[in-house]
Length: 114
Image 1: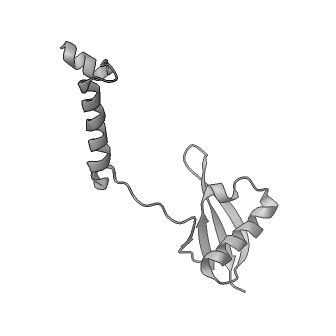
Image 2: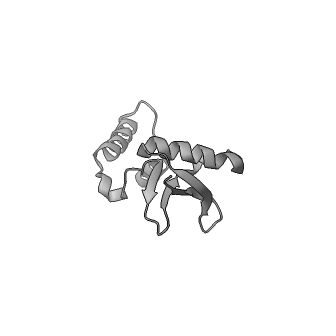
C-alpha cells in the first residue's frame, strides 16, 4: 500500500530510477496515445462561410473582433471576408454568438455581394 501511496503522491527522489520510470511512462503516454481517444479535431479556420437563406453568412472567431468597437467591426469583418474569398462583399451586420453562459463564442457577419 505504501508503494501505491508513493506512486500517487510522486514521492521519489529526483535522480532515482522510480522517478525516471514515471517520467518515461508519462512521455510514452503523451507521444503514443492515439488522437482518436481524445477526439482531437483540427480547428476550423478563423473565417468560415456558413449556409444562409439570405445572402451569405460568415462565422468569425471571437478573438479577431472582440476588442473592436461596434463601428469598426463591420469594416474589419469585410476586410477579412474579402481576403478569405477574394471577392468584395458588403457586410450588412455583425452579430455576436453567445453560449449558454453568455460568453461570446464567435461573430456572424451577414453579407451581400455588390
